Length: 332
Ligand code: EPU
Image 1 (tube, rainbow, N blue to C red):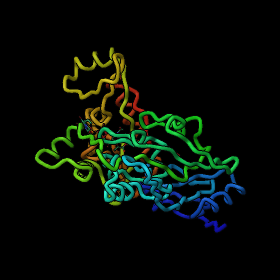
Image 2 (cartoon, rainbow, N blue to C red):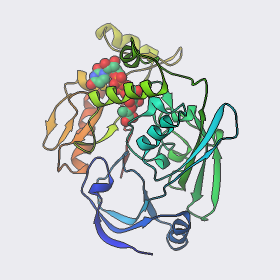
Image 3 (cartoon, rainbow, N blue to C red):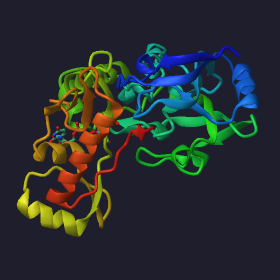
């Protein structure tokens, strides 16, 4: 085992937070992963580092998963089953599927991170979530080192949620994920307003939808290679219809999505903008100028500074709207 000491995690998290890992190891195969687990259980698993905020040095052994490869099972006339190893970059994987004319992932183009972490928060964008094309995943149990297959049902996917954020949090390491994709008759989802507008007068295909998503995301969301960020920092809150009715009297233009007869989802970005935070900067911590749901690191912000800003925003929104904003990224 080649353990390195006092490694900066700055290149390994998309927020670009500079904290040290006391011990760090690169793992290139399931066999190597099992060797690590045989010796050490109290580990921190690092995938694409795209959904975390590091607020203090890592005392646990940091394991960087570097499992690469794609396997295709093409025996069905309509569907193809594609298995990607956890360390594959998500967006590169999406583009590869599109190049093979495999449909289903196009709306999820340009989401930062790796394949292995995508099911944990059931990544979603532009009307599609991973659960819509998910087939199964393989994970190694940290305690026993044994491999287990999780079906769609076993993952208990919800809005930015799964079993891996709840009862199995820190209990399993996802090593590969399989998707059931279409070869023919692609199920195209163009319902999202911005996508409909982009595709007006264009041929609708998995490629053109992916192009639309890439264009929309690039126009609204900061590129983590240029400005550190973790995408949406908060979840869109779901509120009771009574509170919604009260708020709507005061804020007639408030955007909303009806979830059920009793629940309404409000875009957190709108709430943050209403409270005057959009584009604001406090030292190197800030709120993105084009999408107020995204907190950014302009260079040398610490995780604690970003977290302080988040707390300030949560407090303001609670005072103004009586709404609790829940943080979406993992605070470590
Ligand atoms: N809005 C504002 N001000 C802002 C941002 C948004 O008023 O600064 C309003 C917009 O005008 C629009 C509404 O809020 O009416 C929704 O905005 P948008 O379409 O940008 O989507 P979102 O609800 O803010 C969610 C996901 C994104 C995903 C987009 C598109 C969550 C927490 N976020 O954002 O996911 O890309 O929808 O599907 O559900 C991520 O998770 O990292 C992420 C970027």
